[in-house]
Length: 411
Ligand SMILES: Cc1ncc(COP(=O)(O)O)c(C=O)c1O
Image 1 (cartoon, rainbow, N blue to C red):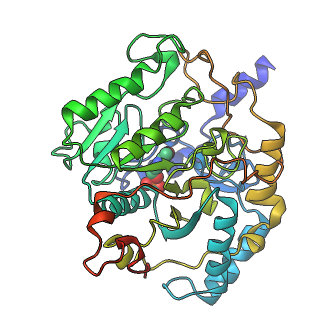
Image 2: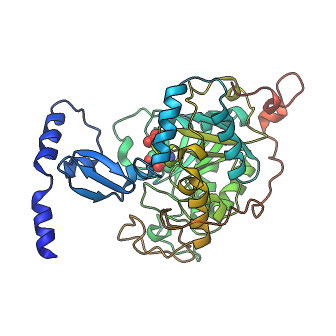
Image 3: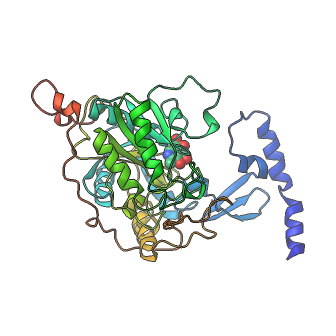
């Protein structure tokens, strides 16, 4: 064993990998993920969860393109569906049977009346669209995010990035405020849950009261913070944020790019809390590697203008889910498996950092969908929120007496 490890360490990267890596490095601009830079591997192909480098070495890929390759590599049905679709039509906004099937499927998979989907290319783009929707719906301008939060790196979301990445990239778009997340293992206030009595939420309330103009369009939150180290907030946290958003006449946007489609044991992580956000953002594994993200909005807010007026993008009709991998490979069954297995102990499951022991009251929701299929999601156990409270913009209306959100449809 030691001998094998010794040999393996000495031979990586192999000569072909290294030569190709060096050749590319002459022209490649910075920006590649550190795992690729450190390993200096040149990948030839992938199959399932296994990657092969150009020297013929095999690796079990635990990274999966940072949660993107949800079907693994070269799933035969995925490959066939992509080939078929590209040979038919690969760009454009016209209705296709596949897009029609996809939006219906998403409406079935998501809880409550999260029934209206629109598609984008990247996660950040979808978040920006969600923020535009929040501003359109509420008539408000400010946004609340969280320390440790990650929603992409474009200009519109950079201020919501709760890390040092944004240093030296200012000035940032105004109107964003960040507050400590309920990261109990590393509480920003050195408190302990539950005796803290939700100090971080109380702090957020004070922050909004004292720092904002109380014109909050949205609270945007990852139900589990992924990039920050898979931080699972205590149960009840999302509900408190839901209540706060309602009090402010703001939308609650849950960013499920990392946690969506069964990766935490439910189809969506919000279902652990039975909380219904106004907007759900999806990406990463959503396209299984095809660059695709989405905004899924509640029926009653999705038609708010100006959001509803503008085209989203020249959206490519994605392959039908059934075509791409069948139930077996895609979403449902996989997520179903995870859900049946239920939340599992945190140990060894995620890139949890050394200072991240499970905090009091924190249920574990693992970010791994490979092992298990679930009951079809219980849509009905969600708290039903039939009507969103009216907002200043609703009350202002559109000038023709109708509420703004009924004015138009997305193009
Ligand atoms: C929760 C979350 N939101 C948004 C994004 C941004 O997605 P993209 O890199 O596709 O812009 C990421 C990317 O890691 C993410 O983890």
